Length: 76
Image (cartoon, rainbow, N blue to C red):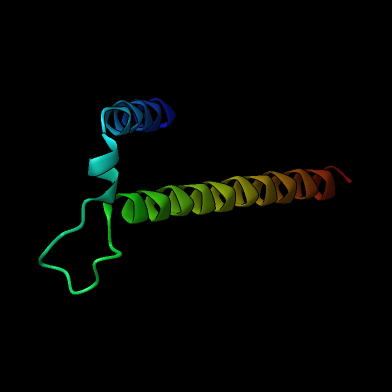
């Protein structure tokens, strides 16, 4: 799964690297709020990714600590 996520992140980075200044400021005329630009959505996407990754790392660390504590209790 990590390799799949890495490929997806690389593909996103390549795509974002092709955007022009006009692209970043482009909004969707179907939306009521003109501040909802490519820049806005990209910033929120990256924030969500960072937040979810942080949770996954914390959860993984908590799971590892729980497993170590359980193993320690079982060996006593």
